[in-house]
Length: 484
Image (tube, rainbow, N blue to C red; front, side):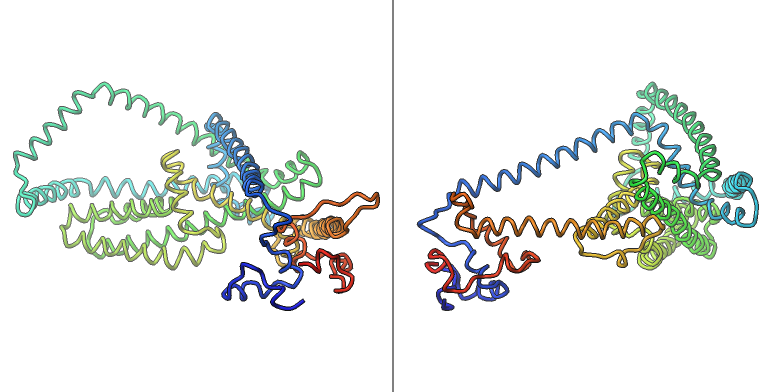
């Protein structure tokens, strides 16, 4: 068979490079108009529609399951929130508790000491902030009034040319609005009081759960393994350990980044002579645990204080300082520290914070990144199991964090080898069925379409037994092959 005979009828000169990696058998299976075996467009469209319908049904089932899980989570949110917060707080205190256990201190005593030390640290931060704010508040109030008057004078001049009468009119409108909606404001205040009460209860429950997580957390993996069974227990042990390492690594990394932001911004504000530099630095540290949004909010507060106290020039310098520190954080510290822990693209982090803040406010923004990182850990783990099944990766290519993970790896490699062998066997049976002209009972076997022949006869899909796909000599080919 000559090269001209092998060429596809619709092939142009620019298609030779695309078809050069196919062998002769694959080129013969490429689609071509055949008057003897016409392909109806309805069959092709129907096959595509069936594929689309099947995957649409799967996506609808998955979306329905996600909606059900979300509905259940909302119904039990008052119980889920303390658990999530307690896990994050326990991940911060766990290194200290583990160190005390290694030196012989009972884990219950170490948990109590660690929890009290954590509470003492938070109370100590507020004890630093409150006296500083109380001492500088009168001066800050007078400077703020002076700054507002300067802004008023600036707004009265060009290009704004806002007169005092207009400002007074706006103030009167605001007062009238408050008077008209006083009933709604009282209702919101009462609901805020209820929210504060719920917040206090949530905080107390979080502290209690944190103590038990620190005291009995090492038993939870074994407890989970007894519930899910032995085979699933290997996966539970490896996956839960990965989730714990991700959460603890995120908190420690974010604490380092927030501490660097607070130190440099606080130092810059002290140099610029901005009041409340220490409280702003502490607020920057706390707000840093909400990625991107928290740092911007704390920086805006620092610039506002500098504007109303020290003037426009100092505010510009403070703005430059905040932007410089945040650029160093976003381009140096976070990629260097969090890339090994989170393995999340910054766009995913931003979207997670925005969605979390929209759905659940500040708490949602705070929990958004840990939840997104946990979902990424689960998906990454499933992808590794798929790679082991397909043979794209071996157990040595994956970093396992537990002994159970190594057991899973070897089992998955063996089951993957069996899976691939069965797949090659089924492919060989189909190839044999399609290449034999007649079955044993004398009935003709079904013909394969061009796409099926292309898939089965491609070089990458050849079975292990080469005799099943080896091309017969030219003199032993059927009359239909010679006619092609």
